[in-house]
Image 1: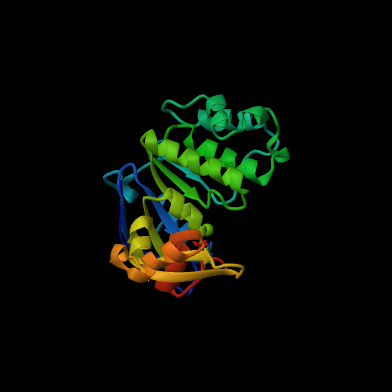
Image 2: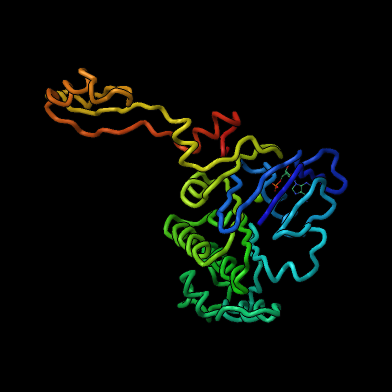
Length: 287
Ligand code: ADP
Ligand code: MG
């Protein structure tokens, strides 16, 4: 669906290049994530892909066509949710959606259905100026899907949301993919990348250092060890680690299971995407 080769970009008047040659591909029905700290170039990349920033270097193929060759009809096929919600604050959510819906020539969804998806049906007739930040972000997503786009671009879709609302957005994105959408999502939140993305690109300072599926990365970077936590008499919790390989024949491990008065937990030592990010890029995701 999306194929990007050697993408470079320098903002007009800027002395330094912002993107230094990005390469990635997004398959149809894939949820592809850009994970990186603030200032890495995620929004810049999204804004190039949606045709907002021009004069980039390299090539971009979108739905089997050069991005430069697409005209206004491009916007019939893509949905965009910007990092900062932009709505008509004096209008209600329903009025906002009816307005944006009228801009499309193709078929659109019923605004009330879309509002129900994002959990805003009760607030459909409320003015957007009275919406909380989380509600505005959900309305943003509702607006980006009203014309059933093939490709959806979501810039930091859960930023500033509480866990319940973040979960709603993640479930909605998964649902949209099930209905056939391809999703490009940017985030500095490793949970979003981990729970949502089929594949994730690590981006720092305008460069991609790695692209892979989160479970593959966790296997590759995790330690093949198991940690046993146990209580030994009145003492505090103790723990011991054992290699996963040959665990069934590991006498020390088997003896511990037999002799420990009380085993509390047994866990493989999985690493987090954030730890891998730090190991690979040398940078933290959030300051
Ligand atoms: P992210 O979305 O990953 O936080 P951005 O793409 O917004 O990062 O920004 C990447 C870099 O480009 C930053 O150094 C930022 O200061 C710079 N930048 C962003 N917008 C502009 C602009 N309009 N003009 C000049 N520089 C910009
Ligand atoms: Mg950004």
